[in-house]
Length: 229
Image 1 (cartoon, rainbow, N blue to C red):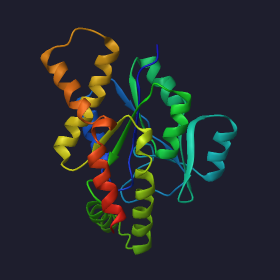
Image 2: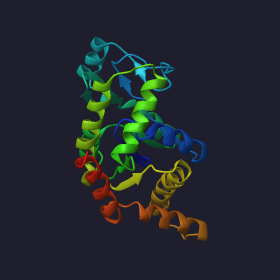
Image 3: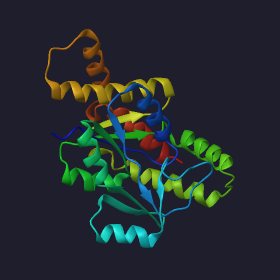
Image 4: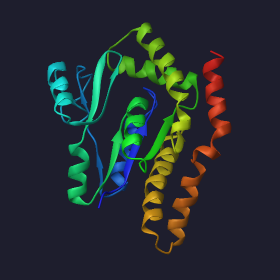
């Protein structure tokens, strides 16, 4: 029996990686998909930890052999999720968290309609720009062009929010981690269909707050911050 497939996406600089790293400390039996990419490592990134770094010819060979669940070209670099991630998780009886962009989310949803999709957003354009500048400094990359391009891309990506089940605004880290954990555990509880404890109900209630239908006002506010800049 297949486990739950969770999709998590976010504009660059939204803090998704930090959220995922914290989530994995608290939620057992949740495998994380490490994507393949043709881009070069940044900062302290290591092969097999953040990504599998491969050449474009290797990536194209994997496409030809049908090895990818999804793949996309982003800023001239290729990213893809191997089908083996799902197969390995199923062998262990684990759920799997797929870290993919908005292009990949559409591909996966077509193949796995019951996948649970979570879109992580920054609280505003101003905050996203601040995070991008801090990250650029830590990576010793000082380029206004890169920052402007990522901000413009973020605005376009946010417009894809209707495709997602949950919207998580990453404002305060501890609260955001709690919300993400609640979403993952709530979806497990829904599929188990067993009587709920008071703690279980709290997870369901917290997850419900992040359902797309309950986040419309916040999303409009975030989009407005991009439109007004």
